[in-house]
Image (cartoon, rainbow, N blue to C red; front, side, top):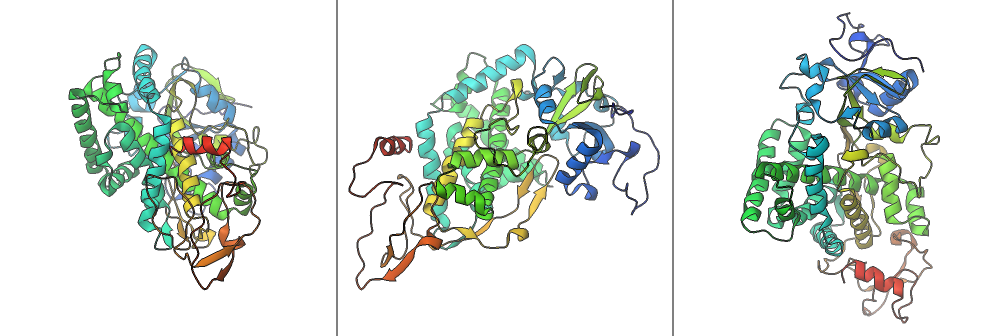
Length: 499
């Protein structure tokens, strides 16, 4: 395509903007679109308009009209993150920052400012820090991780299962990742409502975000001190004892990176996946009918609603070209998974099911690809499956159009996901989740069930009341009979669940 005549580097022009009501209203200097403010409430629509006008790479404005490129193409995003010789995560060479356009109090400064973490390092320093993080996470016992996820899910569902209603965002999706990550890092005693609220507050950038961030960092600092004196078998201890020799500051910063990144991405992933199951009939039908497993459903969610819409940012180390645009040394670029996943060149039909295709951009790529993506997938896979096992008759309490979102450049959060279900009894947190009812005197006539991970019992059960309550039937595995011994697959599944 023909390159745009302007580059977003440097000080923009001073031409007055269009008056309110003008079709161009919402654009800034140079006619560039803003990714903030009231005129950017629907960023998905804006990205598609930018794609139509500029192609796979478009010039935009960040807060305070700071110029930037947003990378909309799938191939262009991958090229950028896989080309460390051309693009860096270190913002110190970003032209607007060098020219003083980006003030210390800029709203995005926490994402822009360089930090002593592997995500912002290059070369040997990146290798040293990344090696420590990768090695520490490789020590995680995945069988123990499954037990932890199942146990935490059981505890969370036990809190609301007897009420017959819940908000799956605030009572489940925002809690499960924090409970699991606190255990992985070695501080399960720190997991509570306050830690969850502090993490959410710090990530939202509210007026109390600094205090909340301080609270989390004090907890991580205390953990680092304890493990430096007395190592254990957890990620923190392995970070400290790695031959890379991380300082206490480096350990704390990487613990913060792991905790916040895993928490934010997985909380969004859980909420998005559960929303899809509850609101899209075809989605749930494929689960029920066995055409889709829960892990495949999670991958579909990563295509449709990646946890991070964009990541700030990458910076050009030299003059180059990307997507038909002339990129100058010092230009900043947004890695954009959300519009990249909808690139019509790789996804002509945005509603098409992407079964078996894991080439989405949700976890990045190249040297800075998310090191904890398998943990996030495990939390989402096991958590969603366990929740739907406990509450198979779960349904949305409100109309789908009444669901509300909170959007920013970085991500799109589901505010709440209210649901209803038949009240259920609590279960032993040390056992795998199973289906149960608070009404054992009601016997459910057997109805032929499709094999799958989720069974919509509410729509398929035929109930009748017996004069005397029978014994609660044992839980059977899909496709098995009560009298038959467990198959090899069933024994393997129980082993994976830690039973």
